[in-house]
Image 1 (cartoon, rainbow, N blue to C red):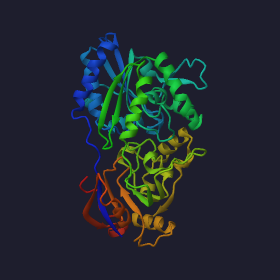
Image 2: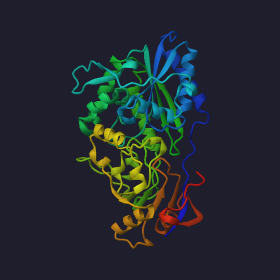
Image 3: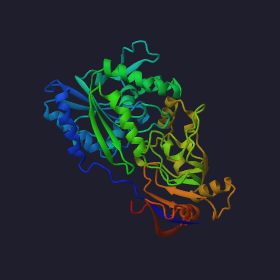
Image 4: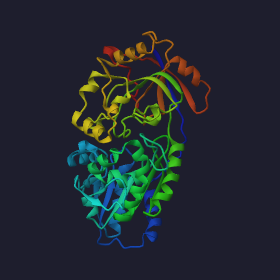
Length: 418
């Protein structure tokens, strides 16, 4: 089966100097902060997402806090991720370059929490005990469309206030209310945390379609509920998407928590797999083949259930304890179900084609291959998809074609230059 390389040209609207942009935001924030930081012990909350330039952002923030005379330290703010263990969460941050020797602040990782007054909310509120015991907390997170639900508040600073900083206790509490609970309770719960906790400010990050920082905003607690929905609109408009609406088979090389909270971004693949929740109208993908895990996911395969076929090598790479803890905490069990397991990538693709009613040669199959749902600039596609994209603005159809299959049941080395 022949595939052709195509390139999507997304707008190059990224921040040219991330360190300078962070400092500019912090300097603009300083007069609004209205309190001295000298001598204050400040927690900097960082999550488990694979945010571009996160090491630079955190290092610059830590340096600025130190320049104000504060004593910053890092706390993982990632709910149940990292296997819901202190060392697992520390290891996730280390994989992003967040460790003392690189950012200039120690990482204090614990699952101990304190309970905050919830003022009559249906849910309990928690906060990392180390952060709660500090003189103030700064939250750092990317703002983007959520992979479980859509609303005025999705994934960002407000969600980090509630679930990220609330550790495993808050993740279990909030997910116990299901999707509707997440949709309706995160906003008011975050408002209580901003009022009852010790949040100094948030640093919100919006990425462009090339997964580079596009906008940075330093916001006071009172500003976050007003400004985050606007940043979410920008993030939604900036998202990368597949260039076609209909595919028989999508081959995804890597799944991981550094790619998306669900391993593969549900907004990209058009699958939710949450009972009672409507599936997205598009894209329409009949079968998804998943080939492996990212190194940075440390065996956490949450989201594997969004695929239809996986390889044996991927199945053997799964850390079941980390995956099951994350799946059980989310309560969306289908996303942890293991699909059909093929011996090789070639067999997985052939099974997918066969299940679509296509010939094993797949000459008429609409197939695309991507590295991950976070990496959508480059794709390899079969002729029917290539023909649809010919002449489309912002799409470069390359002259480079290759056989999809290589020796030994593997697929060809698609990303050798990446």
